[in-house]
Each structure stands twice: as structure tokens, then as C-alpha cells.
Length: 140
Image (cartoon, rainbow, N blue to C red; front, top):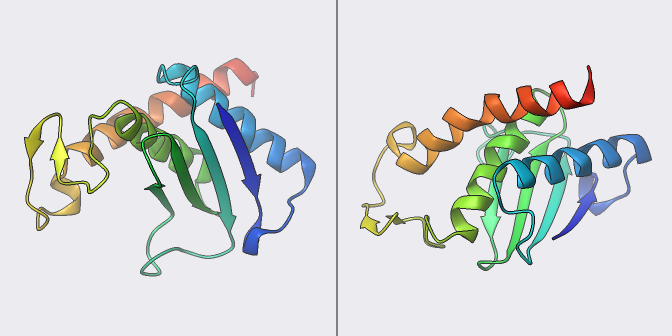
């Protein structure tokens, strides 16, 4: 697994923050059972909300083994990172197809509400446990 962390507009970040984000990404991957997969995960940190001015994070699957995770640099970015790492697992294991319309071999239409999408329900269900476990092992 190869993880890169870049700051706003593709720039460098303070070492401590970049290190912490990378450590969290590695921990979440291990917890989700995908740390041994040959994946490339690019964590892109932004200074503002994403997409529609209302999104804190986003996972884009470039392929079944390469992923871009975009994070807003303020707010609960650790929880958002955990949520997006669940999506990395879903894509990498083939549970969610790259077009995001087939979940565990079942076809879904594109007009299903965000909150009702089964892959989002799973990510929301797992994100807090991942963060709790990470913080516990860090002794914070």
C-alpha cells in the first residue's frame, strides 16, 4: 500500500500533520483488512468544503487499486477520513463498482437518496468505531 498526503492546491503540509494523516490512513486500512492490498491512496487536503460547498470529504476510485481521498482541512476530518477509507475498502474488494450503481452484486438506480445508499450507510456505521479505535491506540 502506497499513501501520499498533499496539502491545499497540491502543496506540502507541515510534517506533523502529514504524518498524522498517513498514520490514520494506515491504521484505518489495517482495521478494514485492506492494508496488504497493492493500492495507491492519495489523500488530498483542501482548505474549503468540496464539490457543492457542502461536502467534507470525497473518495474517487481511479481504478480498483488507486484512490483519491479529498478532505476538507477543518471540521472533523479524522472521522471523514475514516468514512472515505470505508469506501476505499468497498471499491477495492469489489463490493461497490466504480460507477457506484452496483452494491454487493445488486444493481441500484442513480436517483437513490444519498442517505439511503447502502454503501453510505455502511460507511457512516463504521466511521466512529474506526476513529475511536485509532484514538485509543494513540493514547489521546
